[in-house]
Length: 212
Image (tube, rainbow, N blue to C red; front, side, top):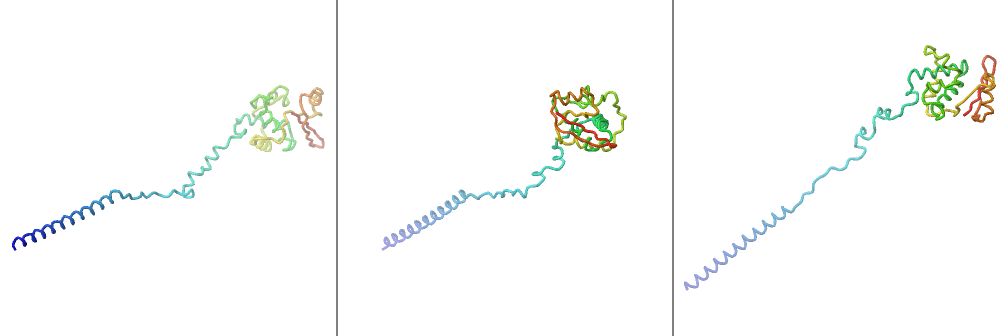
């Protein structure tokens, strides 16, 4: 009888021990799985949305007006010295006299054309002092000559532009020119006639013919 009780007690103890072992094992497994899950969990990194173009400072996209102005190329007038400008003004005033602003513009444009042409020197002084041109400027020019406001405005306007209204390089007035000049312009074949300009002054008509 005692032996039976002992066996029963032993079986109960074994059962309890087995149950405890199973319980401990189960808890360990759950903890391991939880740790594993935590280790492999990846939290996505939050990134900023790309900024729209409208959100970017306009100072970066658009240059300042001063920068734009600096990019603009200088005009021919800007590159001339004060002495060169005065020399052109006096020449135009001397050639045209009391005639109109339109006539002065035609002559100023011809001087501009010569400066731009490969057929003529590259400097204002060389072009205007070239032998046989512009009524012997070397004999009468002076830096003290006073230039009228109209002539100043004409020269500034012409030399501030990139193009002229005509491409003439030569001109003359038949009524005021020597016979050899008329023959050269009209019959030599060295120049091509382009147009003529007529203007009245003190009741007298003066016609100037332009060539290239």
